[in-house]
Length: 265
Image 1 (cartoon, rainbow, N blue to C red):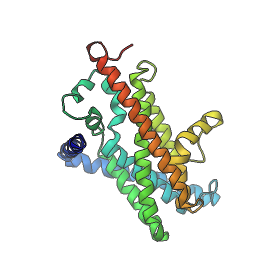
Image 2 (image 1 turned 135 degrees about the vertical axis):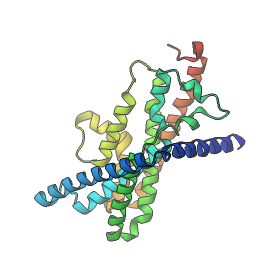
Image 3 (image 1 turned 30 degrees about the vertical axis):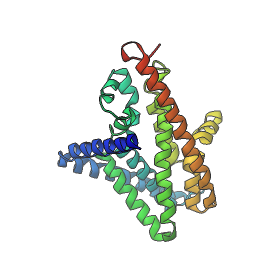
């Protein structure tokens, strides 16, 4: 319990320092927030033109675009503002900076996950909030399910990222930059779940990542699945995080036991 308390306190401390540093450049925060907000709304305008022309796109209505874009923008913003530092693991390993994370009497993962966040993600947060508020104006009874789904997707993305990034400990030459590709696929597949990928890769990706963690919550919110399907989402999120943490622990021990603190080849 004492270790848990230390890790929580360290996470809060380093997160606060990160945001304090970020907001010390207020003009930069405002410009990037507004810029990203306008950029995201431009995509919504493009979707509006497409819906105006075709009526619906693959079964989705324009109203549901508010739900999907808001949902993705929110969990994307939460992930990178608070726990997305795991995506920098390969950078820390390849540049021999991971030893810097071990200077503190807490799990290095606690410090690492705070090493992300950019002002542009506040634009994602604002856009996502606006989209969800508009959607809720039309579907006011679903706010609880939306909140739960965003939290589950955020934690699910962390588990998936932890799995793929931790593989850098075992395959450092093969996986350099690979984790970023996976995350981009994950985000893209989340925003347009029925439009992406083909063949065997599609079925693997959907089965492991998108269907349980993204598609189920979205379909529940659309009213096409019973809320009980979120149980499968919870199971998938737990399994992803357990596997990810297992790989992290094995990997960091392998790293520490290497010659000079490096990875054992």
